View (cartoon, rainbow, N blue to C red):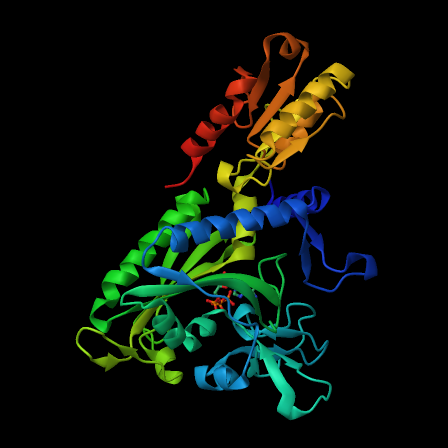
Length: 430
Ligand code: ATP
């Protein structure tokens, strides 16, 4: 399968089945914006819920926050974003297209081969105005990362939740960047979601906790089902890291369009808390100091794109397209079919759907041949399809068909919930 065609197939599947639609489509769209449909939102929610369960709910050393998307511009002044958060921009002197200089090969315009201007720094902060008058005093910026929300609330969190070091603050939420060249589908957009952790430590322990978060990120990537061979952990060398960082790793994934950043991990020293004048008072030693911090960061949309591309499969033997998603990611867990559209079968099948719906995200489907219905579920990654036939009316069992092997098994209706729960538990990531 050619690289381009794989992306095209995924984009078309995602549109057709309600994962991802072009934004504002009925008005001609708005370039590089995307809307998540019913299955897309379920997939995103599975990612965010598992992330939160794994890194917040099940850990004694983590708390969550949700900070505002709009913050006082002084936050961005103190953090350095107003001055420094920029990418190098070049413009074609001929067609006036603009490009990120570090993404252009050579010194010619990729569109028309015209000459390019020298690079200048372009600030990525997305501006808006608060209040009814568009005056400079009311200029604010949408946050370009969730991270600063954790730093500016550091003392609030420490005092209200009586935290000792080490501990972390987690947040999931939208971020906005006025990217020079958005593109590659949902890979680079101007509006996106991040899942970030700021893990606060004593300086002497940074290496230990850096390694801890690296290992947690590796486990997470394994849970997503991304093959090891498609992921690299790139150490950013001296001179290319931010001046305050002693170690940074870009986690890169082999997307169909190339090896690109999926996640990041950085030791940020105490740069951010120093900027915001946030300190920590050790209740045992009475010593006041500025903690250091490790920052693992994950993009939600890049995660969606990585799992869609890694799980997409064209199974020629069974003549089907398949999303081989780990079960926990699948937007629909179980599909229920009556063998035929006969009242006695549809009644029984609806009864079973009602029984299972409180336990598993479920689709009921009675249209077309069973083979066609299997294919419909395979291409959205549904792990199990249940068929209710005439024997079911006599023996109270159903046929359960496994997505990956196509194997079928008869299971008693009274055992269905525990049977499926066991299957999902066995498949759940460590
Ligand atoms: P890039 O080099 O690709 O521009 P970055 O190094 O600027 O990314 P970070 O500032 O480290 O990215 O952001 C943390 C995470 O947020 C990234 O690893 C990525 O998953 C996600 N992310 C960043 N920018 C975008 C974007 N424009 N669209 C979608 N996701 C993004």
